[in-house]
Length: 250
Image (cartoon, rainbow, N blue to C red):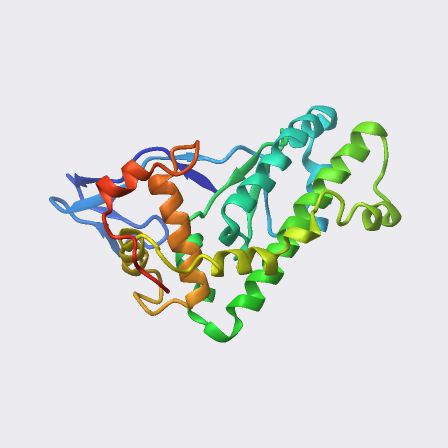
């Protein structure tokens, strides 16, 4: 894995290049423009987690060298990851985070908020989102509780009994996926037409197909927050200045 550090740039190639494993196949030709992206390799060791508890426990036991320091860092990062998921619920779709050997959590592949294939399946999206959100919150809540247990009892080996006990700790079931979805659907009118148009223009592997209504409402509301929330609530003056149309309804 790697992270992007700068915007992509078009550079002219000055000599022919071939693929390392297929030397007869040209990769770039001289005088051709190529898109180049500067990246930084992810820290090592690392693990990509997709709600699989066994992957996390294996990483902790086999790859982490300073477990006390790891737990202290993770104790700070898990609540942040929970806050990110609450703020951007669509990250639960195809949920994934990366964790390094120091206990830092990284969010990545963020374009899935707008481009996941699940957004085009009207019949199944609401159920899929609710389950994905609940399972993602439970996974992070379980991790938060487990970290607390480890810090309180250094040397604790995480038996099955303990795993069951801390499974839903730290997760507020009242704010489950179904409730989050209903909250978004209640606010489906007087939406920013500018945000609406931006969401309609976003395309992924399926092109600009029609997204399911529930997913589109959540996307438009997210774009609105990014555009108009100044951190202390809505800036009505900014809304009027930049987007005079607030009468779009889904």
